[in-house]
Length: 383
Image 1 (cartoon, rainbow, N blue to C red):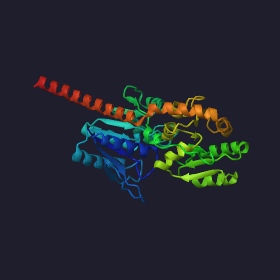
Image 2: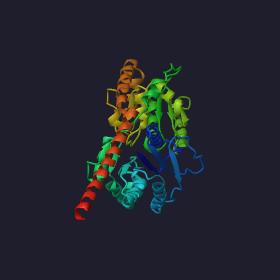
Image 3: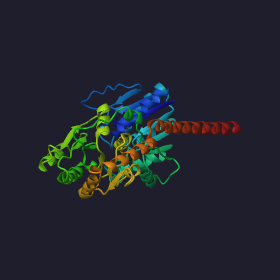
Image 4: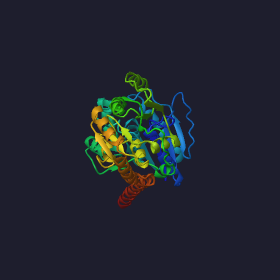
């Protein structure tokens, strides 16, 4: 099978969407499929990626409103070179929108996997009437739409009014990579949080919540991994609260170091204001760690309140701190919830997720062949 992934964001930019696409492309290639990732050039960074699949870089359009269809030229060139069977667009806009036009020309089966921020009503794309129409046009043209969670499925249904072509396939996690790392006895137990340092991730709420916990447990430590435009603001907030010795901003952490962070923490906190479906939650599950998360989006599908963690309201540092206090000083509860998290992780085993993608691609290709056969039969009848 030949698959072309078209995305508007990719490595060396680091985030859940980028890492997911890299892992999916690599896994499909390892299974013998021909995979090409059509991705934008990232300015000011080394765009060379060590990968077993093909990467084609394009110049990102200067505007999200004008000229986005120029990427059609890159898609057409790839089609002529490799004649791929499936076009899988990562993002409803602009990739899905451009992919819809491509499908009209080549009749290639089109799969769209929205990220979440491109389809949620409070995000910038949906607030723009012109771009909102393009999102709807893209999703309606797709042969299959991937929803990472039931929450996103409901949002897509609101946009398209259809349900039959929406497939819920969550992100996955390579559990074996976590199992191969043994947890170490940390000299100083710590709480872990991870994600892009942006407002929607709610780290300001977490810092305030930790301040309350710190008053109860002076030796507590919080480590936050990630980078982003709010980094300096968070440094200032930490300094204002006098928490410089207790909260560590680690920057981007990847690979074995990231796994070690998860394996050795007490529990994981996801304080997001909005969260379609977070890879970091799955990594916490794979590490066998309880999760305290805000009651939003995909968080509610990974965390069972009182079972493998706690769900708390957004914008409420007091409630968040209360949940953290419950876990911090109760090692028996920590142990029980850790075991339950590890059990839940099995549902998201990476190899199972990859098989679901392959099954979907196969079904689309069989459907295309069936339609082609019917068209040929009708043509023969009238000749």
